[in-house]
Length: 334
Image: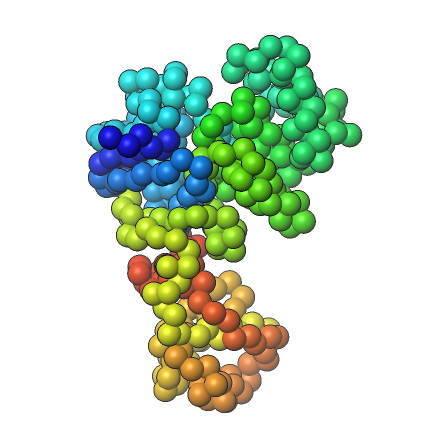
């Protein structure tokens, strides 16, 4: 039987959340099915993207794989080791950043001291840990801050140290939960190149990546799983997922004012309209056929347009087609 670096079979996990008064009699309990008999196989050397809205089950799965949370049922293995029965061996097989991980280092220690400490915890010699720490701090552009306490670091610098911590042991499997969250755009771009070119192509690492940034998932992932309500609803390459809506174009409109976008749904030729924080995305088979009508609708409402672009469908558009909601829609956290 083929051995997968990351293997998940029929994993389920429920949480019971309590709301309401501090008085026991007035509390309301709610059961949340975070994962529902989920299956996953990740191949050696691939970058695997896990995408879904808040509360879909991404973080719960990551916490199970990193031995933080115990599943209710099912089996999960890292490098062939059961994460429950062989948790120590499983932990030695991966490096991870979880939920940003700003608080995953010791703030009274310097950046270099933190990395040396965690390197020693993984069994590196003192010299190995020091050399590895110096190298990683250089990669994270933190050499000039190496001997400064982490408590004095900016949020982005703390995130960089945490990312470096996940690499200190040179483990064959890496699990990144929102790795570029909180980083400035320039360094985030560099980090994505580092993940793709250095960690995957040169280092041969197997990488599980969760992210809300669709361009990031599209750029990095060899395969992508779309997860919703604790289940994987589709699994394919980014290009194959986008082919599901290949006959569509998307008109992206940014405006200076908020408005009731439902009126755009009445324009002939409009398939779907999805509102985001400061723009709308209109799906249509042919943007040229509906553009004038859309602009007239906006003019009727005295809406000032900041920008208008015609784009090809994205991974988020594919997710919306499959689920009816976007990746940033809010649910109970899980």
